Amino acid sequence: MKWIGSACAIVLVLAWTLSLHAASAQEVRDPLIDPPQGAAGSRFQAVGQSGWTAGETVTLAFGFSDTHPGASFNGAVYHERDVTVLRDGTWSFPVAVNQDLFPFPLYRPGFIVVRAQSAGHIATNSYVYTVDGRAPSGLPPLANLGAGPENTARALFAAVVLLTAAAGALTATAGLLRSSGRRLS
Image: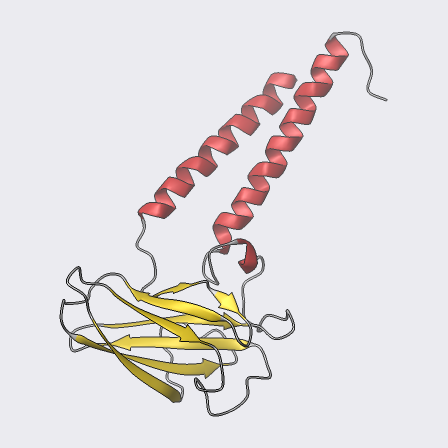
């Protein structure tokens, strides 16, 4: 019996490790938003990582959405900034979540949409804006455990793997104690 629990734990840990490797091989959403969420007064970095041409100008447009906007945000733009793409094809822009970003107070949770556009490329991502620790509606469950609003599957899988590994370890320990003549109290 103990070998079954141990085998299950080992298989799940290996599967999780392989899924992390496969996930890291996938392309990260562009622009990268780091950190992925915060409240009033917080700061984040918008980083263009791929598909940009060195020397071109990228216009960053900032909007606000009450629900998760995805890549097809068509709402109002409240702030724009230009940034130049570096020689390595990337760009970076720091953003402060304050009264200069929007012409209205942000009193409710939502998504700050960042759309980056150049002559040959458009990319959109969003920053999760929280108020008093409350996340906006439309945010996937357990999003805080992942690396942003889109990466909850890895966190959920990690939780399941750890729970299964713990159950396997307890089963193996109980089997060892039982076979050695001791009893769990």
